[in-house]
Length: 162
Image (cartoon, rainbow, N blue to C red; front, top):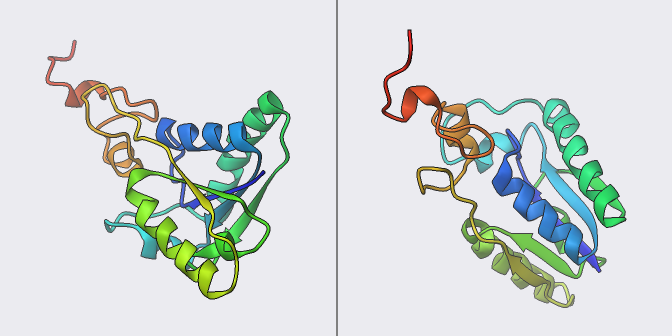
């Protein structure tokens, strides 16, 4: 199967890793990485997004590790529009998170309009941090948690040693 997924991935965290792992379980993977122009438009906040090149370098490390483990082919392609690569005919499955499932449904509408079969939408549940809330790049950048969902010492309410 040819599997697609996309995002900004800044920074990569265990929630993203769950998406990547499910994608590699299903087949060969193509990840659409938002361009420098598109990335700020995909954010629900005003935070700075690192450059495409920086995000790409981190993504390659993650994908190569999983590709080796699953013996799969993979590629990263630049996304310049939100629907990106998933409207191309070669894909069978789109891996999404609960918050991006609606976008996946919109992609399938576009595919139908273009005479293509809809993609199977594989919804991967959120990964939770130690505090029970979801792991997100925004929470990491804000210093609430680390990439694995561990609550940072200054945010966990415990007194720190001097």
